[in-house]
Image (cartoon, rainbow, N blue to C red):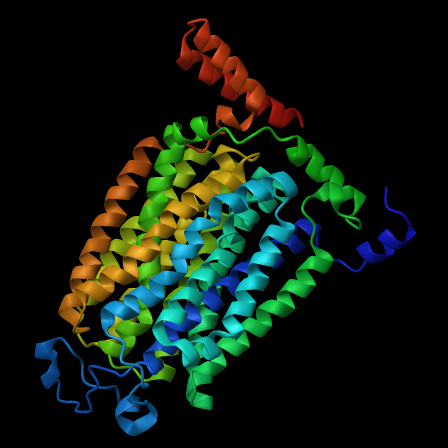
Length: 507
């Protein structure tokens, strides 16, 4: 029961605490992506531009380069910066973030499951904010080598973000609200990309310097951290001013996760779980396409379509605005369909993952054949990213379905392996587009087409939305005993799943 001061504070919150947590989690990802993506915009003004054209007759299209836009040819766009970094080096710089990002996923997941995700998430964002603020100094002092090292450190800080958030959501969000709140929280990636690209374009255009974006987004992230540590907690049981009615509701819907008593992570069971491996495969497909777009779309807009920096910020951000709107909308529809009993959780995840794979695959390739028709290219990229929003009510929340107790570790494994494509993608773009031409970029989009569709087929065949036996170590022990006694393992697994679901329902 709440005492006097706790009741007073609880009255200050009109919305439930699980929604407060979701909003702060959403803003955490927004900050993470703005700090990650701002370099993608800044680098277009830091390096010497290779394909700058000023004529509007289209004569450069034969070389795969569009004539400059009206605003660019009018003089509002610069010739770039002073750094002589070729396309391959730029790919290494943009991909360096993910070298560190991959490393801290699993440690972040384990720490989040053991102690809760509050400080694992908060301190990761704070460290990234500090590294972001000092980026201009590091670049001016040490050039590309120092920048690569700093981006590696930023990746280390952000690597805990998704595992920690998954652990927090598993402790706070009941199954019937998982698709919409999960889509809302993870949709912060799109809003962060929108905000990061749009604001970066205007900041650079207004101040005439690329350094401003790093100071701006770093300071905002520090402000978020201070608010987050004051009002958010690792689970309902430890929250000092959550209303008794909400705490009781969450107890009935999902029970309480006893994190200090959680047994060691069942690594063997996780890596031999077929639905889990299908989820990893889907994550690879999603991340490959998403990171190519998020990291390199501003370069495509600048180098191929020849947009000015202000136009670049606007048109690079537009596809992610629609992706965010569609992800949240499809999240509500997915939960509604599940509650109505029209479709089960497994088929819901498969349906929306398929939408999010086939749509982007087709429209990204189509955009590369639209040539220099800038309006059509932006429309096609926008449709591609809008359909990609289906990943969030699809495979992105699937880790919470498979194992609420180990959701942090599952997210760490899937997101960590998927993040490897963040290293490969920008490097591949740099290797395949040495001249930054439209025809070279078309090859990149065809490769993305193949990755999207192959990984989606794997997910359709083997994915599941059911709680897996390894979620409950006691049930896993029964499974091991049954195998030792040579009982039918398939029947035993099905029985354990039913028992596990009954336990969740009883809570």
